[in-house]
Length: 124
Image 1 (cartoon, rainbow, N blue to C red):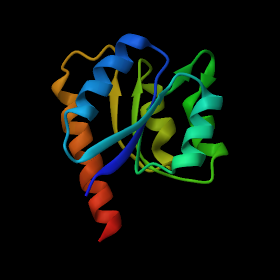
Image 2: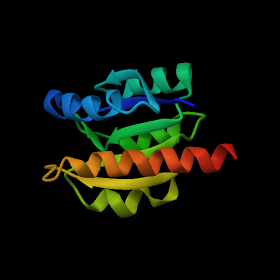
Image 3: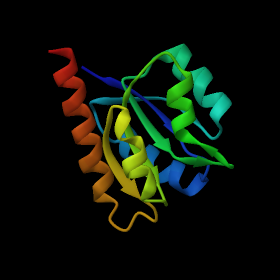
Image 4: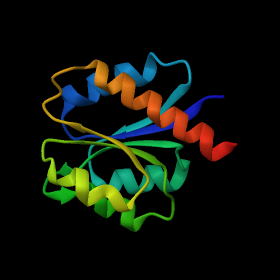
């Protein structure tokens, strides 16, 4: 089974890095890459993805506001330069937190594998 993914990230270099890991995983299907909260809310509402890769700071807006405002709670991987969001996001279905700058890209693969495992648990 393939799990659908939306990436919410406003930095093009991180979009490219994270997208490459999603696209190289045979268990994942990348639905959209968006760079702002309005587009994120629209895509999440439209597609109801299994997995959301979410940057916490998007041009001054907080990624958590996106999760608050949509009627869908995907398995979420938080990506942020501010470790404060590791604790702030604990009220949502956050599987892992990756701190920017990403020093070890393999952590993305490990986090995506954890997201897949959580999706499998939800579906069983």
